[in-house]
Image 1: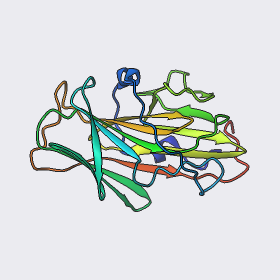
Image 2: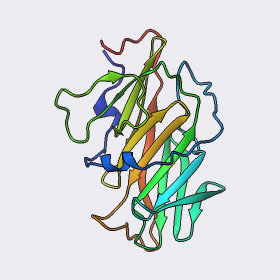
Image 3: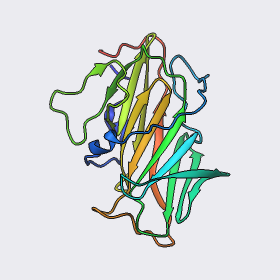
Length: 209
């Protein structure tokens, strides 16, 4: 059996449909970094290497890092490792921010098998497959390689709808923080949009058992 469950990894997650964002081009690249935490383990419990805000899906704005935050006019994304997870806080003084993309530049073995979740419920469509960079992985994804199983996900409550994308140059996390069809209206408040969580597996785990 798996050493962790979908429910444990996704406690607090809600459902939605962000698939149209997968068509947005221009993945953020950067220097690859090796992970030293285990075979194939991807260290995303750290500050991302790049961040982009979206004032609507067709209007990306590059965020620049300042200490623990990523900033642009009227937008601030604060990232804080805590309690074994990565807390993502968002501030937006205007109501135009709809999405945030965080990008970790990592060396990802192309031989990894990948499994993702479904937006609401699965209909026999959850599957292990090779890496597909444009594939949308709602809420969480798992990787299997060299006899080791790892898991990566988010806890969101009702604060954001999230999906992952995985490619040989790294990992992207997308957060939809829109209020219906409009941007989030936070005023002077700060929103805890999501908490990234991971599970580092042990050698000898079978992804099918």
